[in-house]
Structure formats: structure tokens, C-alpha cells
Length: 117
Image 1 (cartoon, rainbow, N blue to C red):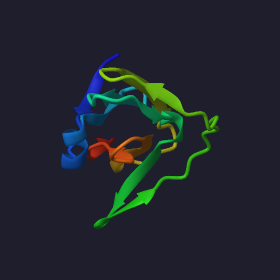
Image 2 (tube, rainbow, N blue to C red; image 1 turned 60 degrees about the vertical axis):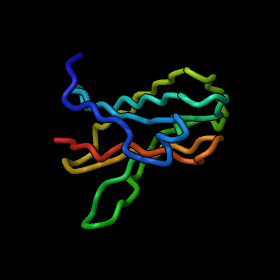
Image 3 (cartoon, rainbow, N blue to C red; image 1 turned 180 degrees about the vertical axis):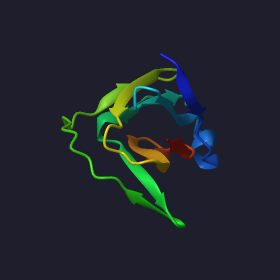
Image 4 (cartoon, rainbow, N blue to C red; image 1 turned 120 degrees about the vertical axis):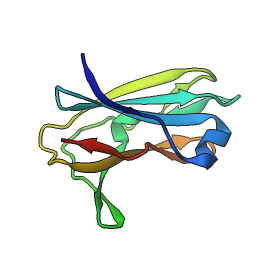
């Protein structure tokens, strides 16, 4: 699978905790999220429940999703990595970011902005 764009988290508070979220957009119009736990403690997460946001002017607006997720809380051990693929079939071109809630400190992580063409 050829990658168009790979970005790492740019959140200083998140990086200081060692928890990062990155995004890679593929030519198959999907987004692969990667959550990495570089902290010393396990964190809870559910990447299926992550939010895709589109830049509109100087604001980020949530993109409606038809995804159905179980509301389970998974555990990611220190040094662990979890991946989740999000289809982008009905997403118009633009600048986006993804956000995921975690059971840790900080309580949320976000990717750097990325472009869908």
C-alpha cells in the first residue's frame, strides 16, 4: 500500500506524556490512525470512536460519520501501539485532523492536520 502522507502528533502536552496519535492517508481513500503509548502507564482507548474534523476557516468542525462502534475500552500497555483504519469514501478534499479520547493524561490526543485530495 502506497502512503501519500504520514504525519506525527504535534501536541506538546501530549508528547510530554509520551502518548502520540499519527495519521496516514492511503491512495485507497482510507486513514490509518496509530496510537503509541510512550508513557510509563497503561492507557485506555477506543480508536473506533475517534473523531474526524475538517478545517473551516480558523475552526475545526466534526465530520459526520456512519461508523458503528462498540463502546469498549481497550488497554494499551506502555510501549504499545494500536492501529485503526477509517474509510474516507465520502470525505471531500480538504484539510483534516483526527482526535481520540484516551483514559490517561492528557484525556485526548490529536493528529497534526493532513490533506485529503
